[in-house]
Length: 132
Image (tube, rainbow, N blue to C red; front, side):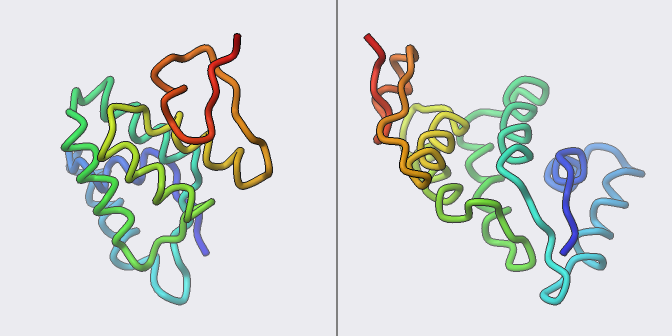
């Protein structure tokens, strides 16, 4: 298995730098395989979403499409795979932050029920509760 940093994943997704995108393409098409999968952590996914929102000014629909495409790559393995897929569905179907949903789902997987927050939007998610 080979770990993938945020900048490799971003260059592969956005294809905006000729040299680095070419390297990222080589990594995705030659260096990772069924025998040596690429490993993507939850930190990397949260950073990818944040950079796409803030730096690239992508909208929710575009970002959800990028996430969906990544989740469909069978040579990638995701930390907390089930939680990541559920957080993607929340992000795609609700007006919630990907990282908030992922946080609550990972916490829940470890037995934290609920996750307390001051964030009213996040508190609408399953496994969150508004702290009072």
